[in-house]
Image 1 (spheres, one colour):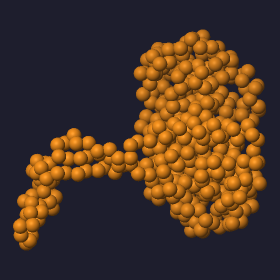
Image 2: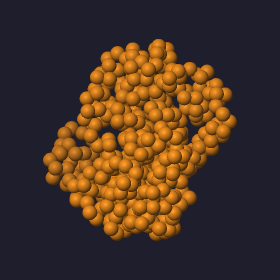
Image 3: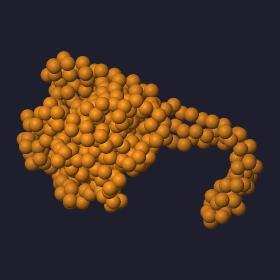
Length: 447
């Protein structure tokens, strides 16, 4: 039996195909039930609840004064790191900043498409954002870069980081260095659902924020869902997921190598190769175990669990049309197109958070140092949602100015709409009543 599952679409019922499209985060009912008392505790008891929950979930003893990372710990973080990771962080920050500066919209645009009227948009930043940096299965300082740098480029006045405390009760040194590098002064030691609750309600130490962004566990996703009436939850970024489209123009081993990338995140990840070539599918499956041997047992176990189950392996499609129908229905977080015809295949793709074209567009480069944010829509949301970018930290205000001539030309139609919909004050506002008020010929005494 192959150590990697092969799912044959041609011999699969529609119900089985639908199950293949499901993610591990699809049903948060049980998690929501567990999260509700956590949220209630933070709402009613603030910092005291955060301290108790750090002991319960993180195994760390904190006092209230330790919830906020000190300025000296942020300023001195670089000295705790090897020069190699310092250089990598500096490169990543520069690349991500450059990409998002290019993404910034014009602050204001106005057009006279309608004669005598100026209409357009004005962009301004949101007031505050919390960037969630997870820590459960390892250190993830890149998440600080991919969330906080776009927020700073967008001009958000207050950007804070929330992250679980490590075993020693401190924030990861790389995350602290990133904060110092990009000008963030506020890091708070709280993780999971309690972090979402803290920035939703505010505590004695943690400020209330307008929005929270960043990847997290199902507990984080459940808390965002429950608190969406208190804070903008952003686009949920759940367990990692990857589709790889592969054809015979690339080595089977390359597809196998990429297949292990996202599957090592955890047993709740999803990772599939999609191909129309049975011989290639079998060759990919045979090549995967050699990469498990090179990964270390901790991550290899995650990958084995994913690739030999319903949430991973190889999807064998009967045709290229069926292959891309599956790809678009899946709407993956990451989509790698391993083909020498990658650009020719691009028009077939409608739904994907990130599309990496060709054999050299390696997922880790995109994840860490290329420039676009690696915070991408998961759980099939890439069919309507987009990667995190400066637009997530900004909002538009419509701007309009009408000359007298434009008003006179457009008012009758507006009045007709108002009368049809039964809004008489609207109708009066674009009637001769307005004309009399503006003419100053006589005071308004009634219709």
